Length: 222
Image 1 (cartoon, rainbow, N blue to C red):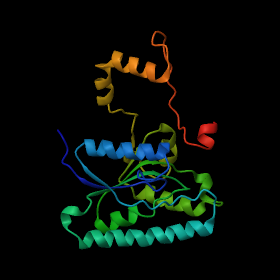
Image 2: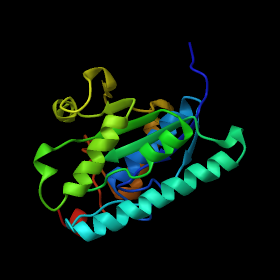
Image 3: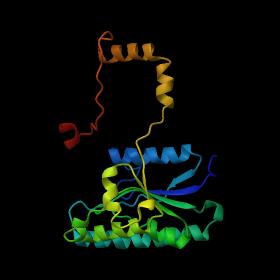
Image 4: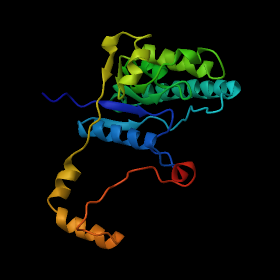
């Protein structure tokens, strides 16, 4: 039975799906939004606020926490003041860890009394001390708050189980939207001939496709 549609506030503290720089994180965030929308839900990006600190700068982390707390309060106030039909019924955060904690979702979820869900969270006890201690603390608090944590990789599950009940953790295996591939199969020969001409390839030998992040800099150099 199809579940009723929900209004979902989507947030990615490491990199928003609308961020200007391509990356795997941006792509996965966008695909998760597509999957939720494809299931019939109304999904909106709650904020593009980026909590990432890659340098272990405690002062920066404190500033980001303060900005996040103020933004969370403003978001909750705006939604409370607006029409009930525009208010989210669930908060969904993608990818939080000690370098990119979620300072928004737990606070907004509490204020609106809605479920808080995370996809891809990691918990590393060794980060409890050191330059990212504040980010570690924030991530741990968010994970403890979550009604559900979706784990795309099983490697994260043992760490998560140190701070939340296993019943709140669900392994999310890789999945695909098969529609484009099904459509392409129907026109395979024509598409193959077109690509062979465009890329000067021999259509009579097998091809090997490599999929990689090719943006300028370290990604292209590797």
